[in-house]
Image (cartoon, rainbow over all chains, first blue to last red; front, top):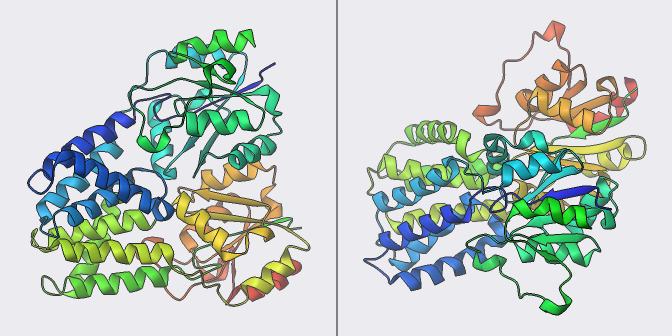
Length: 230
Length: 230
């Protein structure tokens, strides 16, 4: 029944949000002389959301939003050395080793024998390509698609591009909002594999559990059995 | 003979480098209290080249490199308000109206009647998609490819992906380094349409004019006649 399985990358194949979280902690510590940690977090999120229309998703936009927030919360008193620390923490994120999540390697090895595999990930083109290359996983995938957003039209266009019928397609990922809801809305299947942290922007209300139209997995290692059972 | 024509976007279809140039002038003026304009320009270019491996091409990386340069050249004395100006000039670039270059509209209208048209552009995914959408030109193109770099393998992979034979493919763009040399190296044809300014990183030595293997155009309006003559 399922012929093509697409996987999200960040927080589905490898750790990502944890790096943002660490950067935010360092950021809050840096701004502690000016502002309480909770207010820093709120203001940063507000700045990120305001800038999303111009910056899109990804680390570089996140760093620019941190710098903007730091200037705002310190009333311009933040110094060059502190801003340099923010840039350095962004560079550390871009340079961070790729840490695969548990079960990823063997799950992909199992699945690629029977299904066409794709990556569908959103964010910064250059950074995502670099992470995919460094992950050592690229050879499992027939197609790699880096998109600027994951909406219903995005999935519709990708399926049309590759001639995939929705009923033969399953998407697995950690974000209900990006990897699950738009996919089931176009008549394809989706598996939700939660990550330990969810970025506030990616949260979505759970569907009514009784009428749930997607599959909930505890980890990616459960995906082969799920797909086989469909 | 030619079936598919690919066009670069920035500085081929619309003005782009001029926005970078204006931002750099504002940047040099901002740093005038700390450093002479020529030294600012050199240091910024050095920082951009060092960061290219982490940031890739595009405006967000450029802004981060400007901020880093400002901190370095001012020995950390640059203030929050000045850094805010750098971020704002980057936002103005991302928000700038798309100004089409002369002849673009009518050339695309002519060519799309007889050839498959593609955009192949490098840079930031989100920013490039936004510019293509705002340009009003998207409907002329069958395929739009935003890539992180334009090398021989990039072109080879794209041609393979769409089943295009090199001898039936022509690329037109303003950069010898990105739009011309890698294209003729894989056996396809290329037309160079210079823009008024070339970013230092995109300069390439001209081929021996006697043995030139690509076509030199003064403006995009000359492209239909060239392609017809091949």
